[in-house]
Length: 411
Image (tube, rainbow, N blue to C red; front, top):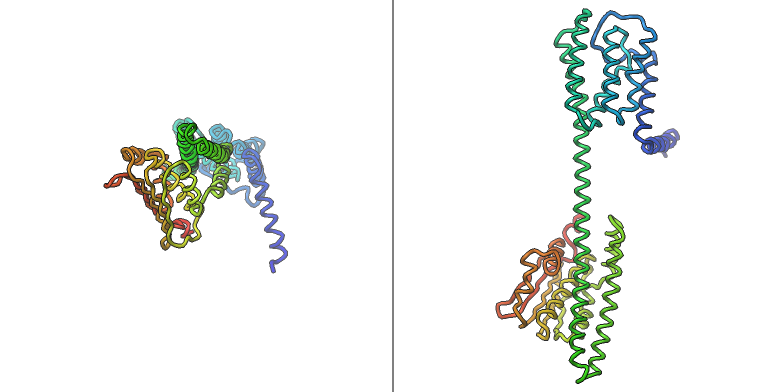
């Protein structure tokens, strides 16, 4: 059982931390400045602070109070006006040392101002550093003229100690800038990948459906007089294909209305609704109705696989059949699926037709859609993809797609 004081303190700490994180940067700095100012008047800690002059002590007066407040209260604006804050604090610290007032906890405000200048000052940083260095030299000369026992080595050591806070602030600023650039670049890469993914889906859907509609419409024109019944069937297929295309397009265009994780999640849901390899037979039958002779065989036992692998396999067959209808209409096409061990092998072969190298061109040029897009999609799933003309004529598309990518297996 958790002790009562721990059970109370942990939620209280979390609530206090959450409240603090929700405050603006200026509000946080104001609270910090007030807390440090209060500490400067606590007897046990008020005389802890920075000291360089070591001059004979003067009695405290109203000017002492002013200089104490001037060394710490400006910290409330340390992120809004870092250069101005540092200038005020540094002048107050120098005056406090030159006048020989007792060491004060408020002098720690100089360290905070130096760090803030390094971390938050945007421009004129070199000029500020030069002005501070010059001012420090002047302070050292004044203190030396006032018979300060401090040596040159002491002045140099204190200067390097002050410079360390400025350099730490600049290092933090550099790290934050690099981190922001990294996040921005990662977001840009993710956005580009998402756009490319949507573009591939649009290409696969539009090209396949529109190609089938064009072929069926052309066939209907020649059958209007010789075989009106078959022409009517072709026009019915055109209508059905158009409706399927519109449905898929509405889903994909809906993705463009959202961004970030919403777009990715929505596209994943679309992939869930997309046909899987088990429905490749429906795809083959649909293409047959456009007049393309297709032989379809499937071997092996189909096993559970990722949504991405299912969709990639379907798109490989879809793109290959689209190219067959477009470049080799009426020529025999053979679609073979083989489920072997932990992957699916897909082979789509088209015999004859015009110069099949036309189909290969997008892949050789590294296009982001068509065969080039399929190559990228399959490679992302740790698969293998090849497409090219056959020595005996025709064109062949081969793909090997693991049921579960290695990335998914290791997570």
